[in-house]
Length: 191
Image 1 (cartoon, rainbow, N blue to C red):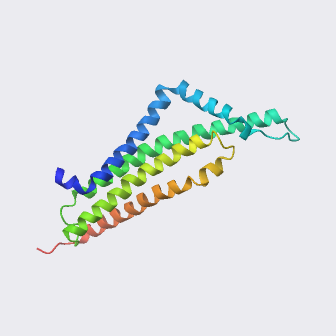
Image 2 (cartoon, one colour; image 1 turned 45 degrees about the horizontal axis):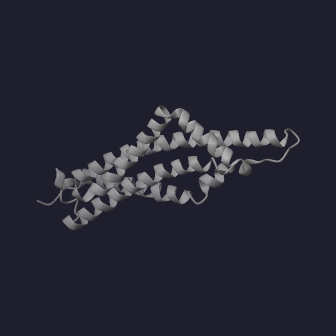
Image 3 (cartoon, one colour; image 1 turned 45 degrees about the vertical axis):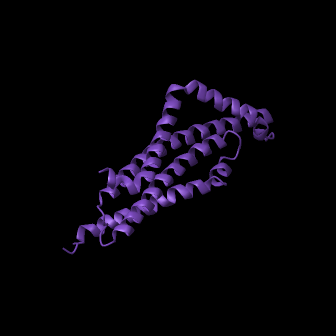
C-alpha cells in the first residue's frame, strides 16, 4: 500500500496541508474570536488613511470613512469564512481524488508504468498544490481587505494569479481523473 502512495506523496502532503489551513482558520475563528476581531480592528485603524472618504451630499466625511471601514470589516469576515470553507472542502476533495488515483496499479489504462507514475505525480501535484494555493488566496484576500478600501482590487488584482494557479490545476486534474475513470469503465486490458 505504501508503495502505491510513493508517486503521490507530495500531492498528499499539500492536500493535508490545505485541510490543516482550513482547520486552523476554523480554530482561530472559534478559539480566538476576540483576538481575531481585535487584529482586524487594529489593522483597519492603522490603515485608516487609506479609507478616508470625502463628504458627499448624503453624509459627512467622518461618516463616509466609517462606512468604508465597516465595508472592509464585512469583506474581511466574508473572505475569511470563504478561505476556511474552501481550504477544508478542496483539501478534503483533493485528498480523496489523490487516493483514488493511487488505487490504479502500475498501469493506468493502456499507459506504461513510467507514464502512469508521471500521471500520478502530475495529477497529485495539481490537486495538492492547487488546492493549497486556492485556500491561501482567499486567506490573503481577507487580510488584504483590511488595508485596501477597494475589495475588488484586492480580490481581482495581483492575488488573482494565486486563484488561477490554484483552481486551474485542480479543475483540470479533476477533468483528467474523470476521463480516466470513464474510459476505465469500457477499457479491457489485453491479457
